[in-house]
Length: 440
Image (cartoon, rainbow, N blue to C red; front, side):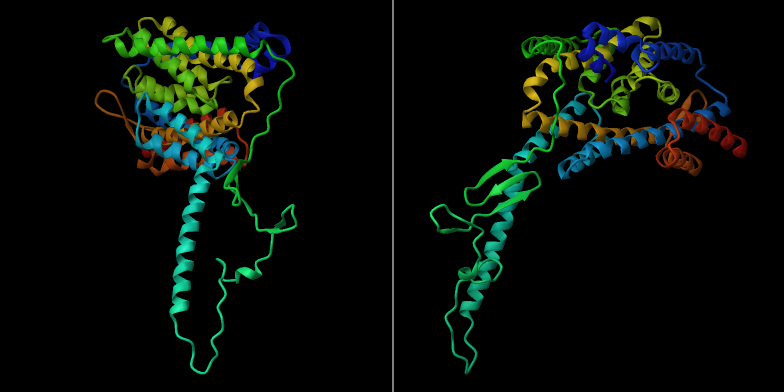
């Protein structure tokens, strides 16, 4: 947001400078802090005292509550109708059931396509036709039963008039509007969840849910924007092809490729990055779950974007070249978003009036928000750290009711009382120390 505002008002270079150094809400200061944190975590022994594991478990519990709160808050913005509500649930359920590097981009594409189909009214039309067919069959069966029944004895049989679907004789059906030639017409228009269906012509008219105002200025026109986007896609395809073709690619290249892909498909910012980074870095065995959870908990107390967490992971992923890992992670996670955003500012003047664009973005956003709930589940499953013979053993937080209370307390404090995330993280650490004092 800070980058976009400054680009629109002052140009690209001022926007980039603001993105890098403006106060403590931007990428460079928080990334430097993340790199320093990684250097400190790298010096921690693999085997830790029990009190440290209790402290980390408290941090993890509070972090799960903070991420869950962020998921709920983002859901309120993302859910605008039935299809977005379904897609939030779809993203959460699909993210919980399966994990793979290619899986998250596919889910977001499915979400975008689903909203396009929904807003076009194709699903509603199919459902309406099915419902209409069942009603017609039921009416025909009722008519056959009435005509085949004999008249009551002593009662004069009267001529039966054909009836409508609601049982009212067709001759008494009131016209809805008059035709231009004076004849009565029974044209009817229904609106079903985003599509207007004209039963007289069987045509659908899309209802546009999104109204976007265009900013006054642009850094360039749509043609250079399209060129920038094409170059970016070519770079992305080249990186992904090399990543798949090379038998044993260097770890530095694999790290950059994974984070570049994550930075490309992340939509919505904030905690959306957590499940992707865990899958693209921790699942590859480059960073231990303990260090991931420790860094995530502490980074929640840092100012600045959550994307800086990738710098922490990149430094740990290359223990012999920590600075190189941090730089590659910084470029990989931030460059795609900046490039796409810059090119889109030129293309948006042509695209923002397109119902196809707004529908697609609405579905992608809802699915991405759903993935945050899958991150909550996976963090819950590994949040309780205990000591074993040689390393930390991760257990679900539900194994001890104390951590469940900490999660619920951090979520409730943030939702109802507006307590900031850094305060919640510190309180979680205190609760972890209290737990250790009680059980020991």
